[in-house]
Image (tube, rainbow, N blue to C red; front, side):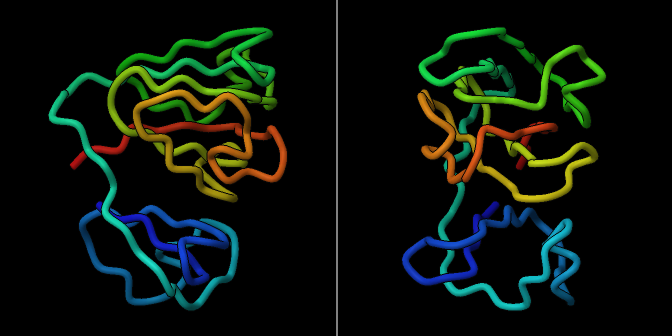
Length: 136
């Protein structure tokens, strides 16, 4: 898997590209029209088959918490969590967060580690409404 960016030096909107073909811009973009990708890097994949992520409502791991293990979640709201995600702890596996439910909007690559503030995963605001596991 690769992460692609619409600007050089890994800037601009990011798109996670898994194995497959991408003949048109709308096959890599879930809601935003970006018809060119300029910089790329490989995704850091763990050997572990386990996937675990903790979402926090506020920055610095504060507020309501949602722990997700081994599941894709197309809507955090349906699972009783608000659309505000201020910090994330990725315990295992690699994840993709999405701005809107149904895996739409801006994509956020969440590799293992701590993200104390939403700007650390490239978001402009603490809005994340869906997450899914990235599998090789």
